Amino acid sequence: MAVYVPLTNAEFYTNSRRGSKSLGLSRRECQNCRKPKPANIPIPTDRYVRPFLAFKILLFTLLVPGTVLIYIPHWLLSDPVGNLQPANLTWALPAGFCIILGSAFYLRCAWDFAIEGLGTPAPIDPPQKLVVTGLYRRTRNPMFQGVLILLLAECLLFADPALLVYAGSIALLFHTAVVFHEEPGLASRFGVFYSDYCRQVPRWGFALQAFSSDAG
Image 1 (cartoon, rainbow, N blue to C red):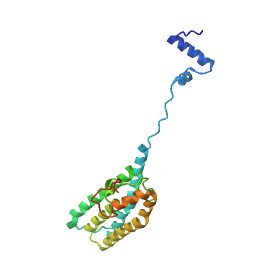
Image 2 (tube, rainbow, N blue to C red; image 1 turned 180 degrees about the vertical axis):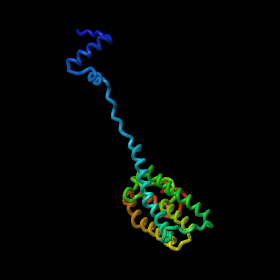
Image 3 (cartoon, one colour; image 1 turned 90 degrees about the horizontal axis):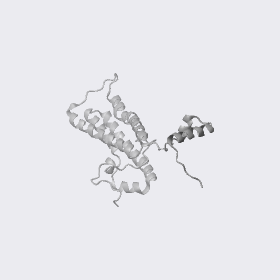
Image 4 (cartoon, rainbow, N blue to C red; image 1 turned 135 degrees about the vertical axis):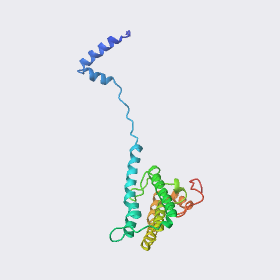
């Protein structure tokens, strides 16, 4: 019958050294063998994905809304030398209100795209999920409306016929893109849920009652 004899710490250390020498292991390698290996913890992808989405949204904002709201209007309102025509300060107060409102619309929509939809406003990198939070609970195209409100502010500050025609052209372009490109694509991706969303939330303007997925 085998008898178990407990070893002291010194005897255990001596036997461990003898065993490591018989296996051809160094003292450090033997100690490393006895150390528990850390578990494989998955990297929190959201920590890296959302900052990258914010960078892409910033880049999109500088290229697309920046062109629509700054670069082209500046070109339309400048003389051949490049001097911008003076603004009409009579409408400065309502124009300032439109600037604040339109900017708030755009920034909130960009936030919802990155946080809720995990995507960008760019057609080549759309949200992975249908965004129905924030302003999207009451209107289907708040970002486009925010851009149009900012164009309205520019039209109030600069009563220029070319700028008015340009703003109307942008509004028509937005409507055409939504009806013939964006909505068919979203309907094919999200099916019945998007159809129900369209029944409750208007394309332009705002609904008095917020969207609810439980409503029938």
